[in-house]
Every structure is written in C-alpha cells, then in structure tokens.
Image 1 (cartoon, rainbow, N blue to C red):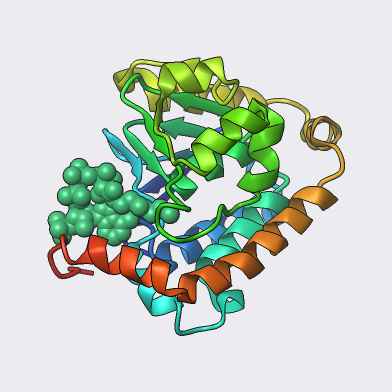
Image 2: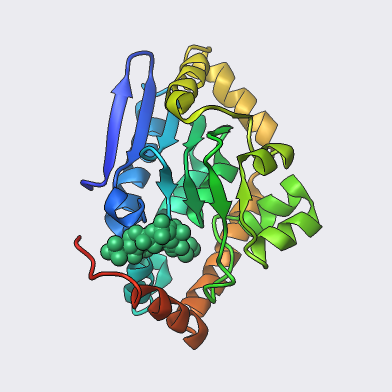
Length: 254
Ligand code: COA
C-alpha cells in the first residue's frame, strides 16, 4: 500500500481512488502505482465495486511519473516497473472508471483518462504529455488511442510537441464529458459513478465491452510502447532531461 493513495469505498459500490502526494504535485511513485493496480484488480475480482473514480487533491491531479523513479528505473528491466503493471491493469480493467481532473495532469495524468469511461475536469485542468521532450516515447497506448480520438494532426501536436491544453480544449477535442467547477468536480464524478454502479452490473460490463470493441490493438500498442520506452529510459537524452529537472528540485522527502 502507499500513504500517497487513499482508497475509499462508498455506499452503492463506488470506489474513490485519490492521489495524495501534494508536496510533489502528486507525482506517481512505484508504491502508488502498485496501490492503484491492486485496487483496480480487486475491484474487478470482488464484483462489489460498480464504478471507480480517480481524483487528486484540489488543484492537482498528478504531475505524472516521479522523475526520480525514472532515473532509478532505468537500471532495472522495464518489465518489472510498477508503472507498466499499472498501465496493463488499467487497460484490462472491466469495472467502469471515471476521472475527475482538477489542475495539473501531466504524462500519465493525461493518458490515464484515455482509458476512463467518463472524464470530467475543472476549468483549472492543464493537460500535457511531455514524453518526447523528456527523451521518452508515449505510453499507456496513447500513441494508438489519441490519434483515434482527436485525429492524427492534433495527436502529433499533443504527443510530439508536448503542447499543453486546458479543459475547454479537451472538451472540444472530445477528451472530456464536461467541465465542472472545481468545488463540485469530485461530487459530480462520484454521482456519475454511482449512476453507473446502480445499473445492472452484467449488462453494464457487457455493454462497456461492446462500446470499446476489440482491445487487442490497444494491448499491442501498449506493449510496443513499453519496448521503446525501456530503450529510451536508458538513452542519454532522457537521462539528461531527468537530471535537468531533478537538479531544480529539493531532495525527495519520501
Ligand atoms: N517527479 C518528481 N517530482 C516532481 C514531479 C515529478 N514528475 N513533478 C513535480 N515534482 C516536485 C518538484 O520537484 C518539486 O519538489 P521540491 O519542492 O522538493 O523541489 C515539487 O514537486 C513542486 O513542483 P514544482 O515544479 O516546484 O511546481 P510548479 O507548480 O512550479 O510546477 C509542474 C508544476 C507539474 C508544471 C512541474 O513540477 C513539472 O513540470 N513537473 C514534471 C512533470 C513531468 O515531466 N512529469 C513526467 C511526465 S512523463
């Protein structure tokens, strides 16, 4: 488990997974990925959870993967990376997932939402996928999912140029269901999750599978990205980008 992920099961079968590492802008550590993966897996296995909500803390969804962990992870096989295990689980989870994005949503903070069934964000949401800028490649099947959602040219701007976008742009691009004021965001997401969880569960899961269609291409994209990601993690370009960021940070407190 992780002190930086809180998991709360609410009446009606809604599970709230909240990222709580505000001192590091909710950057995700291995322990946080492990906690989220276990929670998704348990939700699918137990049958007691009808829908899952991902949220951060006010003003912060997540600053993405912990960059210090990228440096440490480059020494180990990427197949052992908690981030990869989480991403694989995210793609195969059958329980509906809802995202509530307030503030920064960098890297996996954005790509995670591509796997969610419903996505809400506050006007303060700022999405960005700086993989290439960091010397990496896209992950979480974003290189496959994003062009299909927003078109090839827009996906190129977002994934190669790492262009940031706000909630209005995300709504326009079809990456959000609605923009909800910050103070109502999590309640709104929980209400939508409760509405999903109240539906006949078998029908819900079967319908969700039909809407999503064959997921083999998503799984294949995710694995191809993982191979490229591992190679890039070790490349001098990426190591230099990580060091550049870390030199500006104070020593990690966790
Ligand atoms: N990994 C590790 N630490 C991170 C982090 C990350 N992804 N994102 C933020 N932090 C840490 C900072 O190092 C800083 O730590 P410190 O106070 O000990 O020095 C703290 O969180 C606050 O971040 P800071 O950069 O001062 O906040 P900001 O409001 O000026 O900027 C961001 C916020 C998100 C724009 C900026 O932190 C950022 O660009 N983070 C990196 C995002 C990223 O590239 N993620 C990887 C995607 S693949």
